[in-house]
Image 1 (spheres, helix red, strand yellow):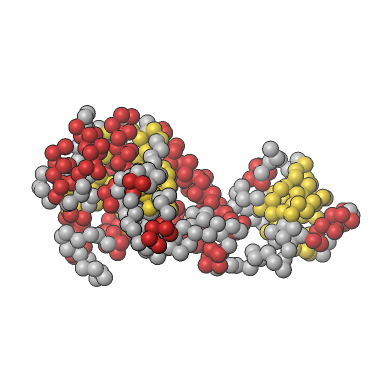
Image 2 (image 1 turned 30 degrees about the vertical axis):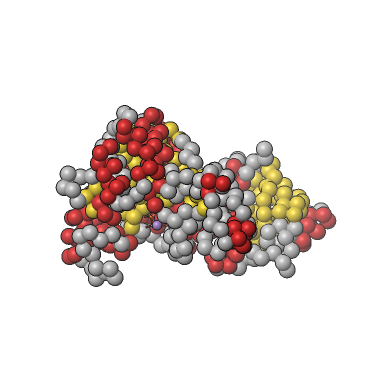
Length: 462
Ligand code: ATP
Ligand code: MN
């Protein structure tokens, strides 16, 4: 394959090069024409300089007249040290070939600054902008860092089902998957008979892979899932998507303390990876999207995470405020509370543990006090909760009792209960929403801007 622009930047001046990419800008100054070409391989485009004193060919002159923002080109020339500030090298160019035109009158992306709202309407073209190119590269780096981290710590990657027959803990509203003739049923007024449906039962898109991951953790010891997750929640917020990606590690013979240490090491690994490998992209986010973002990532990467129990957190919150929701023991900690704890109380990341069992899922390990469970939320400045997890209840009797207590249908969980019947062990895990992570790292306010083609209520174009 031909070299990418990020590779060309590393070549020795004097080398003959050809640059392939899309024109960002064209400027003319006296006898010089400057064409900036970007190929998305790195933040910066490369400057290609044409000098009319070098007697350009008629074809080159003609092509230079035709190109505009968005034109796909191949430019040939020699790499040279650049006299301009902000770039070490440029291409002294003598040939240009137009591969694909992008007429100025109709091409929606012009040199001016476009609003994120406008760009959301043209999600197929927005990766060509600085912002969305940078988001895509950071997303890529983080995805690979997730695998690097788990693979180097003995976790095996497993694929949990996307179509599922279990309503996993009611983590969120599910999308239905069916091949029944819904129109026909509606006309006939009959209720759907799911035993006649494709799978012979009601099925939906998964809201979490955790329960299935637990099954594999009790065989492979350490596993993780990293895949698409769906929630049919009609919440039009800047933090919720209908389709998002979730990372869920699960480890056997692991306590809540092990889980907390894992979450801390994991976040630090991810932030260090982007700080090191996406410096130019982060520089852009820091300058244009959210001031101070690099500092916050460095803070998290370099600090020892604080620890406190839910009960201690409530005591701190009762002293603090004012809050929109008044905190009390037993309440679900709100985002404003989470931010307060991380930003004002601990002044850094903090892990809150041992939440009231009523506000947490049925599978969390019960403490001896009869009131709290071994849950943990990792809270970070500027966002609040970034990770939620727990030690799981490994005791069959306690788990059965809890399932009945909160009115779940025990029959649906028989396979899950088997995991406690046969070779049960203490085990722990957590979930990290991948897009929330990218929002945190980039400072992008709207979650719809950190996934290429967002799915949200009323929005499924492309
Ligand atoms: P929230 O309170 O923000 O709705 P949740 O309590 O429903 O989150 P969990 O069920 O614990 O979230 O899911 C695990 C993680 O998945 C969350 O910490 C979050 O990072 C992410 N997440 C949950 N729902 C969504 C969504 N609709 N879009 C994007 N990410 C989500
Ligand atoms: Mn939710």
